[in-house]
Length: 381
Image 1 (spheres, one colour):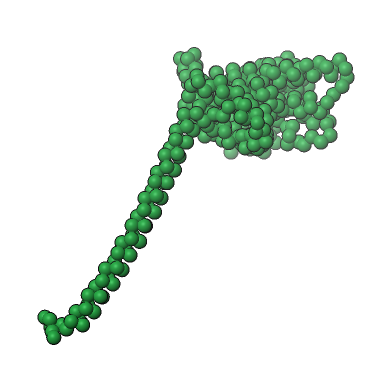
Image 2: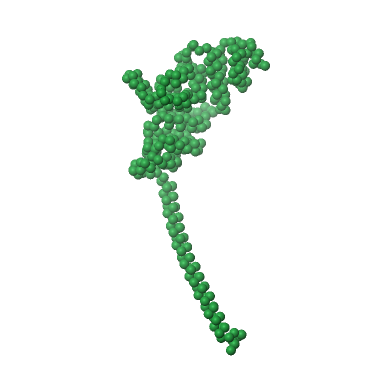
C-alpha cells in the first residue's frame, strides 16, 4: 500500500532519520550552550581582572610612594632595584603636593644612602637628561638637596654642572635680575651643596699641617673637587683658595708633579681643558690672583700657552665664550712688546687663524704689531 508515493516502511524509515537529526541538533545546541556558559564565565573573570587592574592603577596613580617602614624591611631589594623608583619620585616631587612631599623626600634620601652607586648614578643621569627644559632647574635643585643630606662623596657633584649648562643664559639685565631661567638659583644651590665638602677638605688640610699625617681619602676628596667641571664658573673661585689651590698654581704646575701619590692615574687627576681656559681668563683678563703669578715667564711664552685656550673659546658657538676668547687674546697680546714675535710662531696654526677669525680691527692690529718684519711678510702672503 502506498501513501503519497511512499510505502509505510519507507515513511517509517524517513521518520527515524528525521528523529536522529533532531537528536544530533539537540546535542549540538547543548554543546553550544555549554560553550556559551564557559565564555560567560571567562568574560566575568576578565571583567574582574580588569576591575582589579583599574583599582591597582588608580592606587598607583594616586600614591606612587612606599612607606618608609616598608622600605626599611626590604634593604636588599632597595639596594639593588631602588633606583627604579627615582622616576615616580621625581614626578611627585615636581608636583609639590603637600600630602606626599615629606614621604617622598624621606624615601629619596634613603635610596641615595643605600643604593648601589653605579646604578644610582645611571638613574640620576636619566632623570636629568629626560627632564623637560621648563622643569630642569627644579629637577637639579631637588637632586642636590637629598644628596647633601645623604653626605655622598663629591663625585656626585659633577652631575649638576653639565645640567646647569643646558639652562638658557639671561640675555638682558631684566632677565638676570628676575632670574627667569633659574640659573642663579641652580648655581647658588650648587655652592651650598659643595660647601660641606670644601669645609671638610679645609679641616683635613689643617689637620695634616698639625699632625703631619696624610691619607688617600683626603687626596681623593680634594681631587674630586678640583676635577669638577664647575671650575669654569667664576663663582667657585673661593672654593679653590679654600682647599689650598690658586689659578696661577694650577696653570703653571701639574697635579702629578706636585703630588706623587701611588696608584693615581693621569686621566683621573688632570684638569679639563675648559676649566684651565676659564682659569686663564680669570687670571689674565679679570686679574684674579694675578699678584701671585710668577714673573719669570715671558710674555711671548704666556701668549703661546694661552693660544690653546683661546682656540677652545673661539670654537664654541655661545656669544659669551667667543667674547672670552677675544678678550683673552687681546690681553695676552697687550703684554707682548712690538716687533718681537719671531716667524717660527707662525708655524702654529692658531697664530695664523685666530686673527683671521676675529672681527675687531683692534685685535687684528695688535696681532700685526707684535710680529717682527719676517713674520709680518709671511703673515700677509
